[in-house]
Amino acid sequence: MVIIESSGITDIGRKRKNNEDCLFLGDDQRLYVVADGMGGHQSGEVASKLVVETIQKYMKRFREAEGGRADRLLSSIHLANQVIFRASYNRNSYQGMGSTVSAVCFTDNTVIAANVGDSPVYLVRDKSIKLLSVIHNLLAEQTAIDPEGAKHLSSVFKHMLTRAIGIGKTVRPDIQEIQCFKDDALVISSDGLSDKVSLEEILAVVNKERPDKACKTLVNLANKYGGNDNITIIILRVKRVK
Image (cartoon, rainbow, N blue to C red):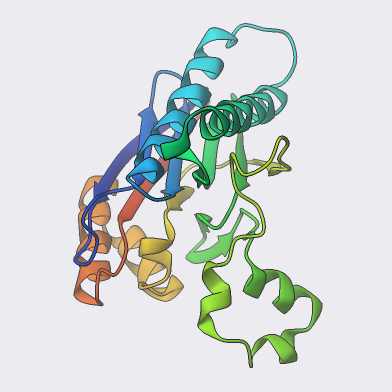
């Protein structure tokens, strides 16, 4: 079994009037989720909370079910999409609401990362950092197709999602499962952090500080650099792989 040290924090930032991010720290389930909601009239808050609650409850209810955890995590995300889509359809004040989601869970010796949207999941290993999730926005997808052309795109395309929870009847998450090792660290965040704090800064802080202190340091950095959005981060440190 994987032994994990975890910490998470969410902060309204310096410019927003409300916090549309939501997180879940589930050490007992070895499940961790960040959702960044969108929509007017505070419906973004509703969307992100519904996403997190739906995934957590589904994974808890079916924790002993047959099949792999990756399949169950995907199923929970699909269910969350249906919940948000129906809520948006049935209530005028919720029309157009949606959310990103990035979820990490562990098996006895692997880590599974699944996501929809642009809330990144990073793996810190051997003094390096890499993106585990797939960023679903126009800038990232254009960069994959035409890196040179993407350099000339306006930064506004960075915030135009190509996939999100609840905006359609179905959704297509990206997911991967990799072996995990002692001293690995996982960083799950909303774009309020990743837009402001560089990968080099994230790497340096995560390698230097314990998860609880590192979370606070990184949120403070994002606010120092403007705090234009809500800021949410979960940091997971693998202490042991039995």
